[in-house]
Image (cartoon, rainbow, N blue to C red; front, side):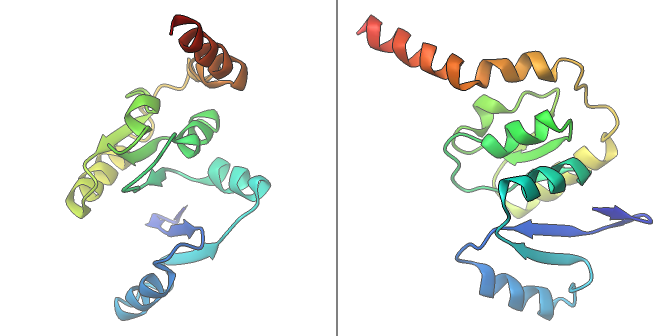
Length: 147
């Protein structure tokens, strides 16, 4: 979230690192810039995504990358790690892939923010069609029929 030139980080979810993050936020005196917003409903996630400047996915493990697809649908640039299914999902037109490290995320965020208006979402709808449930089922059936 950008407010008067300031960037605020919203972290959604209730992961195992909640207590550690809370302590770190307090230790670094970032309570006004970093907010742990907890688990959100699908509707709330859509609203947050639509209002984000950048959607960051700092995953160490990520099976498919549905969050990246949601960000692309909302026409928001994505910063994601090169983990799991994310490299298969995130096309360079829509975001940046980085190594899953503090330095990778830092450099990636700087890149995304410097180019936030240069990402091209004109083909996003066509791109997302390859990830529909029907398309995935067709791909699974094709694999099954070839074996």
